[in-house]
Length: 244
Length: 347
Image (tube, helix red, strand yellow):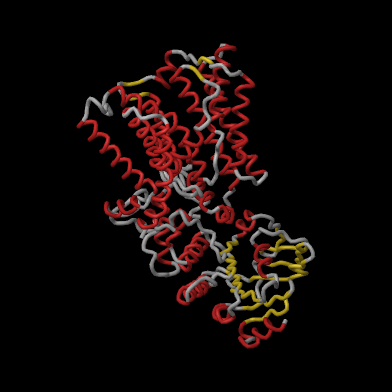
């Protein structure tokens, strides 16, 4: 197997007397979709937060493309090309889709004035070519008027446009309808074809099984199972999630 | 980052991104849902009623007389300029209750520099505006450093700068007598229109450009609309909010200088109550108390509406407390209108 694009080795994190992560090894390959599974409190969210730079590990090291790296802020993880899609997506309801897509990364001239025309064209293109969730007819729509699935679509479209290498999806489908969930899962598959890696945190093993190439099951801050899709089945995964 | 843009098709109608949509009807639909739209309707209706009344009773209701128009256009900027700064800060999700007393403080300092140290009014006014900006920045730094509600921090500021004015100068009025050029530029008039009104218009245009067409404005809306989202995407709420606080302070100082130039003296006791009028103008103009929503046209019309009501009551020789009754009711009605009608418009 080729070298992982992102790897953590022996990371630990304590909150008071709760050991959220203990001596965890985890890696992501290029264009790989990893399903991160486990019961509540297994440490999945802590791992995601650590990878996105919001939480600093107490111990252990991070390797990006095989080289040691320090990820201690959102800026650092953004620089590596990591984007996190949360259940409550990082969108501003009172702003339009265009403004949300380019929030903090506006296209502007040298005096900082916005190039509305270019941003709008790109947003239109991104919405059309990307995830096809019905109902978004104009990039000027206010995000607050969108459904949960449409919001996820905008957040993912934003991550894709800015050429992220790794998407961290923390329970992205828990608030979505069945159809919207399908669309998001399909989108993850499309992105894999474009060599974008994803880490999908979910409670729904069927969703995970549908899109993931590899599964990592966590329990009590440790990795208890790490298996390629070809070598396992839903039944076996269920057993590991439930019994560990 | 934007390497793909050359490949993107240019829309055949060549529509610009600044217009929300392609046709005029779409533009109207887009505008109707902005916060500015409802206040514009209310403002136009009230103006039509006032103008009709003035035409029917030209002698008893002198709304359209030259002196009345002139006085009104001079009164609007003193509130309007403060309200612009306060409005931008509210969009960023914070309040500043200290703008009124801080404005008085910095203009008293400017007057003292002129009177006691013979410093030019231009320099003294520049010092006042820099001082106002720093006071705003200080409010912001305290608010964010200690994660406090800006309401409390600036309530402290309100009292603090009120007291400081009396400490540095005392209770008596202080003269503010600029040279004729300064007097004309900031307190003169061209026909019925005062130069201060032109400054307000200029500020409105500048602020509109900043909010709608500049990166900073986009980030102000983002931070005020959803602070966590802005942080997650890499915008620093601390930086943006301190800038917004500084803008509010600078605009307060500017209005302090405009006021001082208009009446050529400063009463150290003045300024209290301005902060609430400024918030009232913003709220009437559709700025959300929760941040993230608002527009410059609305803020301007909000300030203009307050003075229109005041003017009408004066023309009808109504006692002053009627103003409080009307403005008070207007604030509540405006918020209800923006909540209920705003949601309905968006369907």
